[in-house]
Image 1 (cartoon, chains in turn cyan, brown):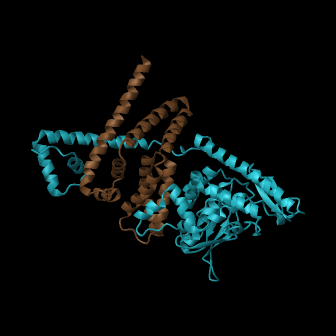
Image 2 (cartoon, chains in turn yellow, purple; image 1 turned 30 degrees about the vertical axis):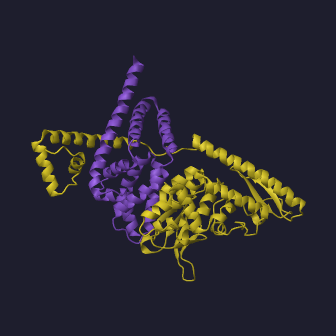
Image 3 (cartoon, rainbow over the protein chains, first blue to last red; image 1 turned 45 degrees about the horizontal axis):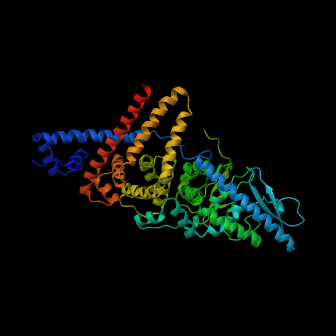
Length: 338
Length: 172
């Protein structure tokens, strides 16, 4: 009598043997006590392992390290140190610029969120940036160098979920996102900074964030020292695990999950935006909530509006660029959530 | 795009459950599941949907799961959260947290292949799919699972025994 083969026995229990092998095992079970005992033991092990694995399902959501956790506090400390370092450099740059007779004055203001920002204003402006534009945050422009689609996508993917490994298993493998998502990583870093409710993102900001070296609000060229500072800050930001995780999480975001995760991680107060579908007919009248502070507008659009390649313009989503684009959805007030 | 929604409806829950068991972090599992479906959106065709989805999710999880410290922190947070609840509920929750912790440790005691194979089988994948995802022969899957199940059960039992002995020792 052959010695009980545990691999064969487990395959039999899992229903994976062909008819011939099944008959052989069943004959051995009936005739050999050793096989019978081995099968009984295997049944017990299979049932026990299922029960044990079920215990893992008791893990609730929301146990990811929060801001109060050691990981969160480390991250907060890191941000604090970085902001402090930026302030020192900005103060030095301010002195250099004044002494050099630059027409620009750098003003450091503190937003309600408590994070310092730098506003660029002409010498005669007493308040924030010209034209009533909101003070922009450093990180808005700091994302600019990373907006090259393939590079930013690969970098964020590698840091969090190894796009290279996945690419090896995808058939065909594609790592870089489509051009529609080019702005995504930039926006995700912008979204990571807490902002007041008044500072809702606009299409203009999103568009300008993609231009390296440009002021995301006014589009004016930046002071070289500030640009270098921000580019350095951008390099630091993209080098951290947490920043890359936020970027990747936002880039991957589908509807509710991306909104929940991004808001939790960033602590942002930006309200969601809602759009009512106009066409195609399948989505006419359907209200779709734009995830707050999510970077993956293109992905969200694909999921929500099926195959449309949408562009956000003002208060509407339009299909594709060009003169033949049509309004697919219009912005509406968000309905109250249950 | 209807295909993407169909895939999402059919496989999302099982993918999240697989990833949650594997990673011990539901939030992370949901993130990886979403990333997996986003990548599925980019594929023109997928021959074996379940196999493809789990393979992609597996690879995403594998590269992230190399940060072991994160998993340990999650267990600590889990226990801490359990302690923060009401006294009566806390006792029940703490017991479940301990069971989950022992289950996690027992699962971590397996090799990567054994662990993945076991979790994939629990999600209903057949031996052919498991073999393809793990990169092993189909005829080896039975042996892999038998080894994994035995090791998991024995390790878990040992952890539970240790806990009972410590409790008895503390009580005496």
